[in-house]
Length: 489
Ligand SMILES: CC(=O)N[C@H]1[C@@H](OP(=O)(O)OP(=O)(O)OC[C@H]2O[C@@H](n3ccc(=O)[nH]c3=O)[C@H](O)[C@@H]2O)O[C@H](CO)[C@@H](O)[C@@H]1O[C@H](C)C(=O)N[C@@H](C)C(=O)N[C@H](CCC(=O)O)C(=O)O
Ligand SMILES: Nc1ncnc2c1ncn2[C@@H]1O[C@H](COP(=O)(O)OP(=O)(O)OP(=O)(O)O)[C@@H](O)[C@H]1O
Ligand SMILES: N[C@H](CCC[C@H](N)C(=O)O)C(=O)O
Ligand SMILES: [Mg+2]
Image (cartoon, rainbow, N blue to C red; front, side, top):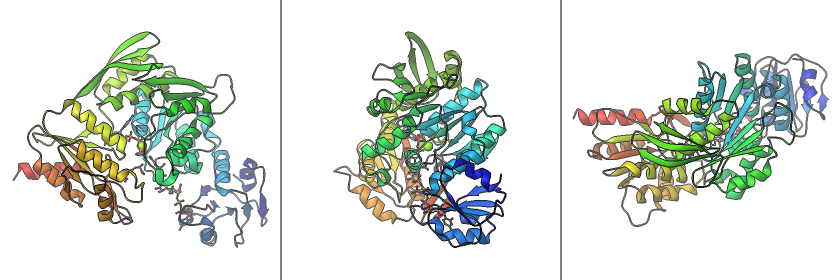
């Protein structure tokens, strides 16, 4: 596409420097610029992308988009807000792919990844080619593209939606994190269905207060639009058991479909029974009742299934077919994933990295625990600090043996993170082992027949970030190695 064609997406800009070069791709990181790139200077949380204008030019950028003065000899398009222009130009550059897709966005503190997997599985089983964008990467058919963020940067979303569409996808389900909504990473995405999971404490380092965090999530529902075009579905799928849904109902002009367990809702679960191998419940929809027996464990999994069923019903899939698919699903990697290596106790690896998810994981385990519960918990560095003492307290209070350890310390001192966690513990004893590998080994060596060990916080992650280095580290592998070593002792 020519530069001038890209600029059709904007209403107000100023071009300095003659020329109408061919644009090969849209780039925001100077280290990735190739000849023909259109480089956007973005003001980030850490550095100002305008600093890299000269580097982008040296690497062959065809033109730049900037909001502050830059000194280069290639054409520069000056706009008021480069990030907003990035959303508009990339949507245009990639041919407005979201408009041609049935796009489902999922927001909420916990459950987003799980719901995207459920939705993709249910729709795929019904013959709807569905792409997925989320924490564990972008996935379509056999394609797996790793991502840096749960919700990638806006130009990457439009680019990948276009690629998925070109490969035959008619629908895409995408995690839309509160950070991404607030930062405008889903601008230009024509979302058809917005799903809300729940709102509990996390990310207050970025949003400040729970109220602001709630409003950040509300953007998904207000962005569903205010027009009723024939043939186009626009719907908000809301959790009636979470008070924030009441606010979101007012934020959207779209259809509202509710789900819940404690309150009346369009999609409701009753008679929930949790066992170590699965969950059964009755699904109540419009006066009809359907039995469900699934392998997913816990009340929180029932919420996720209800949300997915409500959303997928909008794609016209029969309830019986949806239930059949849900019943076949074994689970999502790193979400309540068992590690089985010949031991006589249970080991569960779970991605609970928030107070609410940790509490849910432990209360779910309590439903079927016959002996002790051992909880291994850490908190990530360079992330919200307020949750540290709360998570430590939950781990210590809700288990028989709590092992406090490191998660991803990132650039923080692991001892200081642990000290902030320990400040939340009152009275009860616990074990502190800073090195996560040692901590897992300790848990595997001290578990007794029939105990259940929860290894929380890192789930599917196959790395540990210490400083700015990513080391290979996988809780499931670590647990297995320690179990085998114990058995062979
Ligand atoms: C704090 C935050 O949100 N950071 C996001 C932000 O990066 P940033 O603002 O720090 O960028 P920066 O380093 O200041 O750089 C500014 C600009 O200069 C450019 N640059 C930089 C260096 C260079 O040599 N050349 C160059 O051109 C950068 O490419 C960028 O365009 O913009 C980047 C591009 O979109 C994101 O990848 C990055 O996410 C970081 C990795 C992150 O950790 N974000 C977390 C907080 C986050 O967003 N998490 C949510 C998940 C939450 C959940 O699931 O619960 C998510 O959606 O992932
Ligand atoms: N509906 C839910 N309510 C509460 N906790 C949940 C729910 N679903 C999952 N969890 C817990 O949260 C953890 C993370 O689940 P999941 O990865 O699906 O959430 P997420 O919202 O994608 O998280 P992230 O913000 O890291 O992307 C799970 O391992 C489980 O312990
Ligand atoms: N999406 C979450 C993931 C946290 C995972 C946990 N292991 C950590 O590193 O804190 C975040 O970026 O805050
Ligand atoms: Mg996720």
